[in-house]
Amino acid sequence: MGDRLPTRVVLVTEVDFWNGGAGHRARILALVRYLAARLQLSVVLPTPIDDLQRARCEVACPGLELTSLALPARVTMAQALLAMRSFFAARPQQACIIEYLSLGWLLQAVPAGVSTLVDTHDVASQRDADFMRAGRQPPWALTTSAQERARLALFDRVIAISAPDAAQFSQWLGAERVLLAPHAHEARPQPFREQAHNLLFVGSGYAPNRDGLAWLLSEVWPRLQTTTARLDVVGDAGQALAGHVLPPMVHLHGQVTELEAAYREADLCLNPVQYGSGLKIKTVEALAHGRALVCSPHGARGLEAWAGQAFVVADGTAQFAAAIDQLLADAARRRQLAVSALQVVCNSFNADACYGPLLKVLSALTTQAG
Image (tube, rainbow, N blue to C red):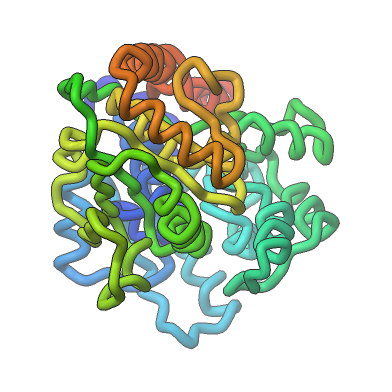
């Protein structure tokens, strides 16, 4: 850690990223680990954190400087801004990264001269429109494109997680203010089996995951010609189905302590999500484990360049079922997809490829200050 750059950066988030179990946590954890190893990174949580959670964070990110403002649930904006200003007074920073526009109001506490960036994870207005088209009322205040554009414009830089998001932000703000930083994942190849039976779906309790799983079980599963297929559902996406009668050979596991084991046992991964936005972390994760993957067009968002090469895109119920049947029966095609998937991850989703441009921008702040 002694060769880190002197650039001082604070990342502000409400997310317990060290706990895993969801794509947004995995994304923040990967970014925090990368930056903490290369410059002087502090992470600030507005909310309190107990000793157990602090210990878990230490396990996930050893040596990370983690500060809790310990703000109560009913804190006023004035109190929150005062606490944030006190942090900056005690620990001067050169850059401030804020996770999500929902915390954008904290910009009022950032001193002049500190570079400000927002890590977006998605285009909020597109995400909200997707929810509404799917008949889902988002559990947060709706954002229009005009509102989102105005809020993003308050930051010096906007971090996009996918190329489509970056294109939209560039149209609004100009390409020079937008940084593309996809989700990085190291390649973790798993043993390959000629005989394939095991399907895997990994997903948090996020509504698009729950609905995608429900569609998979009610519409796709009955169409499969394969009679020996087994589906393992890992993560909270299956919580709503607990206690219900499931189709034969479908097993709910909830959150697991060793996700690696789930990928090791899988022969084919599935991503059936139909709406949402951003980059689908579970898609990158499946590719990184060298698993053949069938996903919906939406599940391929941000990864379209590798469709057909590193994974199969299936649009609609019949096509999705047919793709599963075909890949379970075709070991050569599964192997080809696995090899291509690992190549894509090694070349395009390694940490330097994803976060290097951001690091370059942040490290330049030290040069400018000097």
